[in-house]
Each structure stands twice: as structure tokens, then as C-alpha cells.
Image 1 (cartoon, helix red, strand yellow):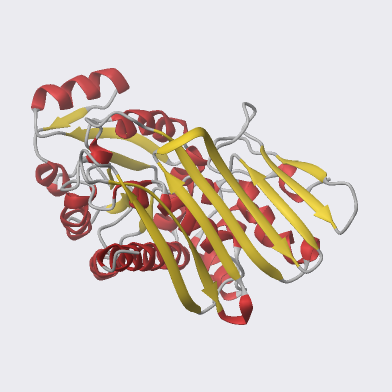
Image 2 (image 1 turned 60 degrees about the vertical axis):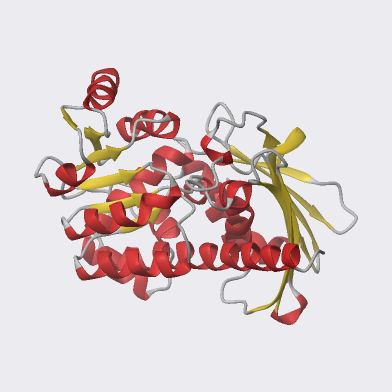
Length: 372
């Protein structure tokens, strides 16, 4: 039986067990799939900042997660907050995120705001003693570090809102990659779709300065973080940006990251793709792995991996899951809140992703300035 087809739910997470797991070198995802048993110490009462499309879609994920409860929402307009609360069954509505962060009605805050204001809210939430799940991207690596410092100083967990990292397919890939294909030499990722609505916030350069690079390119960079062997040192960066003539927003880009040992990660992202493409291709000395639709899962919540050894016919594996990655993200967050030793790995994933994102953004800007 495939190791992930009987994935346990994240019920265990006793702190003493977490300490042992971290000491043994297991990642939070691996720990989640190996430890089950008793109930989490308490359910996290979530407050949501924002009432836009992502905040609405994540309401269902919170309510579907073990160890999570949708308790409150904040919006600049009380009418919007009250409408969201009524729609999703939240008990409390606030007309200020600061009031919600200071309240005793929530234990954790999900920050679903534009990138330009995310840091301020994340830090205030941490200082209010609330665990923090921030949508991606963050403004910069320096911004990430300020948020993480506030979380450490106030003994709360931080996690970014990358769903696919929590699906058991990702842990299965990481556990079996070297056995399947040997030493990894390349990760190629595409994350591109068609978004022509220029009223969309992603085209607003003040609210979302990196445009498609921050929105879609984040997933390319996270694919490199999750699919390459950990700890590789970045040697060089090549990046080219594409701009929308009307708004000036970055609507796409492509490039290459070169790491020590000749390992590469190539990437392409954008809002101008027809058709959409969400795919990861991994090459190693002994084979290849495909992760089609890597941001999503099938209707039964499973995820596919296609493995090819040398000249042999490819084998398609279905990695089962009892829940979507978005729901498992909130369960992993509950685990990290209950077990402090789990927090560093998730924080490091955020840092590494943002560091690569900053690199391709600034190299792309430099290429623009030089007319390349």
C-alpha cells in the first residue's frame, strides 16, 4: 500500500511527542502523517481579516478543519463584516482588525488582505497573542523576518497560506523522491492562467507591487523549496518580467535559478496564459516525476504523481487524502499552535520562498532597467 493512502488526521500533536519528532528531524508534514491519537489541547478560534474572495473561500476550509472554528471577521465596513459573519456563521463581527486582534474572541488570525498592508496586521496580531496565518506573498524577506520576530517574541505560530505544501502528496514526494529518481537535477514549474480583468486587485501596483510575480510566481518559488533537496545554496538568478501596457503591472515572468552542484529550477508564471498551466516537472539522475495540477487535488482529495524510471513506462500514483490541502493547512496550523517545536520548519519554508521571490523580482527589475 502507498504510504500516504492511510494518512492519519492531525489529532495527536502532543507537545512531548512533537519535541521527539523534531529531534528526530521530521518536518511538520511528516509529523502530521505519523502521529495520531488524542485531541489537540484546544480548538483555535479563528478571526478573518478581510471579506474578499479568498477570505470567503477559506471560511469553508476553517470550518472543515479539525482544531479550528470560525469565530470572527473584521472589515473596514461593519456592513461587510456582518454580512460575512452571517453568511459563514461567525459569532463576531468587527469594523477594525486592530479591535479583533486585541479581543479575547479569537486565538488566531487569518490575514487575507492586500500585500501592502499585510505586515502591519500580522505583527499586531502576534503582539495581541494571536497565532498568525498570512496570505502570500509578503512584501519582502525583511518584512517576513519582522513578522517572524514578532511571532517568536510573543510565543505564537506563523504560517503562510500555501495550500499544496500541506497535501500529503508533497510529503510523499519529499520522502520518496531520491529513491524514485536519484539526485535531483532540475525542477521546472509553470503557474500561469488567464486574468484579463484590470479592475482585479492583482493589477493594482500599489496594493500588489509584484503583480503576477508575487501572486503566481510565489507558487513557482514554493515548488522549488518543496521539490528540491533542502539546504541548496543559490548561485545565480535569471529573470525576465512581462508588463501590462495599460496598468504597468507585472503580468508574467520567466527565468532560471541555479543552485550549487549544478541543480536548476526553471519557472514561468503569468496572468496572460491560454490555456492555464499548473505543473511541476522534476528530473533526476535516474528518472522523472510529474506533478500535474500541483496547486489542486482531485474531486476525492487525492493528488497525482507520475513517476518514470529511465526508459520504463511511467507509473501514475494517487496519493490519498481525507481533506483538501486548504483544510489540512488549518489543521497543521492548529498543530503548530499546540506544539512550538513544529513552528520553525514552517517559518523556514516561508523565508526560503520569499527569498527566492525577492531574488527573481529584483533581478527582473534590473533587467528592465538595463533594457534587456
